Length: 204
Image (cartoon, rainbow, N blue to C red; front, side, top):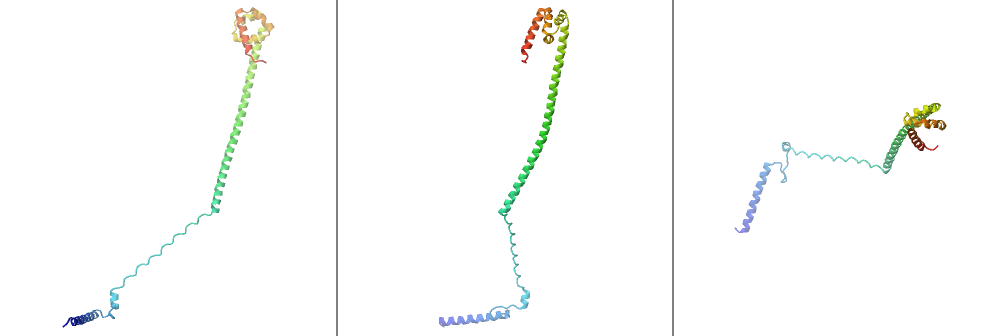
């Protein structure tokens, strides 16, 4: 047998074996037709088909973004804020003005009280000066009516400030005899103090 014949024999044997194998497959799987397997109802019941994959839920749509304020709204808001600020400032100014008015009234009342007090004090000072002047003039009149020697004896013992006030208010013509009867040293002291008093007196 040559090689070609041997090949043909091998091909025939292989075909025969394949045929046997196909018959065995048909026997094991009666539902096979046309070389493809078919599944009976029992086979499908015994091995149910896989469950379908769960459907993916639709993505939630994003919430619509809030609409941006318009230029008119922004301008209106700005005007409202400015008006509120102005109203607040006006209220603050009104409050300060009211407080200032109250303070001015109190100050005016206090000033009136101080003015009245100053007037009373000035009048009291005038009255005191008038009483003092009346007192010294009364004393001067008293010594003017006395005899010169009697008055001189008293003047020699009086305190110098008191003597100056009395002699200052005496009539010069009536004071001269009294001074002539006084001690010379006492007259000298009196003359110095009278000159000092008259020099310090403001001009009329």
